[in-house]
Amino acid sequence: MSHSPAERSPYADQLPKLTDASSAPDEVLVAAGHLLRRAGAVDADASVIERALAAVSVTELASSLGAERVRACADRMRRAADEAFEVALPVAEEESRMWASAAMEALAERDALESARVALGRVAEVQAEAAELSATLSESLAGMDRDVRPLMRYFVALNAERRRERDLISEAHRQDAFWFSERADCDGLIGWLAGTAEPGPHAQSCSLCRSDLEGSALPGADRHVEASDWLRYESGATSEAQKAWIVRHAEQCERCGEIMRLADELDVEAL
Amino acid sequence: MALEKNLSDQQIFEEVLAIRGQRRAEADRLLGELAGRWQRPACYVIRKIQSSYGKGSPDDELELFQEALRRLIERGLDQYRGVSEMTPGRAASPKTFFLRIVKHLTIDHYRRQREELVSPPNHADDAPEISAPEANQAITAARRAAEQGDARELYWTAYDRLKREHPNEAEAWDVYHHQDAEGHEACAKRLGISVANSYKRVSRAQAHLRLYLLELRDD
Image 1: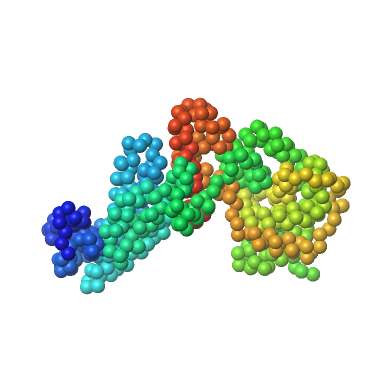
Image 2: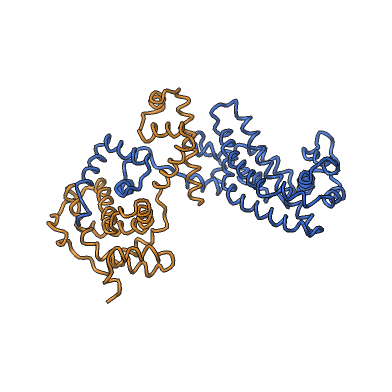
């Protein structure tokens, strides 16, 4: 397959890293993995990839692909969720592009680790000493993903770019790349949750969006203090915010104030 | 005679808390024993509240008693354990805790209904007895609804997080929804911000709260 310069995938710039003597071992691994996972989008000679992987020093990889890097990626992903939220509902419109760029960088780092994992798996097939590192990396990534995968809702404002990245990945690897693929069609979710937009046709047809909209319904604004609130209040189980709301509401609302007085009068401890 | 007849309320309740995850049938049986012991004072509480509201009928008693048991099983057991751990040695007895559930549930009920009052009892012992099968029936009915979460508790947990992580949005939400400001103009005035910013902050707060609720439910 050949591409004109205009059609060349952004990942074509990974090719030189395979043969550049100054590339660090983890850079070679990530570049190889990016190309292996995007075989349909980038015209890369498979033998070049294999030679580069055969030359990788496994002992040098342990420090650059260890637990610290995975932890840093996890922290980065959590911050990126907040950044992506700012794209959907910005305080200042002019900051949206900055937040989008920052959040996509975090997703790119997660993707880099996935490429490293895939490439390391290939190395482990021919270098026995890579097997342990490969297993450890896979386990670390799985642990991180359990924590960060539920945050993918926050990233829907980046879906146009996420879909572009998703579609560059070969079908065999695409669904694993949840940082690009999960909720990638649920563009309006944050706006619907915020009440700044009415749920569109997608919200009706998508079971995940329907579930999120139904499962996040908030108590009505015109509510009074309910039995469950009073019980927690009397048991000392309320947060400061809830206690303040109960007391303030009971002072302002004749009905709830009467209930507070009635509740105080009926001493059930004596029964 | 079953062994639990010789045990105190506290002992039976602690056994229920200990075994309910693994031996549900046994826990239900023990709760049935407690329900049998507590039904008279519970009915006394219900009738006193009926009297205060000038509403109510004897038919309400079993219904409210069953509902109170449902609440006890649904959230009350965890709540009681949580409060006991938070304030060791100062938590109310299990019976008092249950009677508080009855009290507030009944008060809530009669805020919404209008019924003819019947003569309230002079003493807790005058309240009619509910049979053991009826008490067990109450437990069974309560167990059916035990899977549902307490939406309001989750809401306040989400709001506490909003206060920590996004205080400006939490403040706007508090004014707009908890203090019932009449629209964004009133909210903006109270906060010293523009109407556009009030709208923005309340919208952001709503989105955050709903996302937090979803994460809590995912857990």
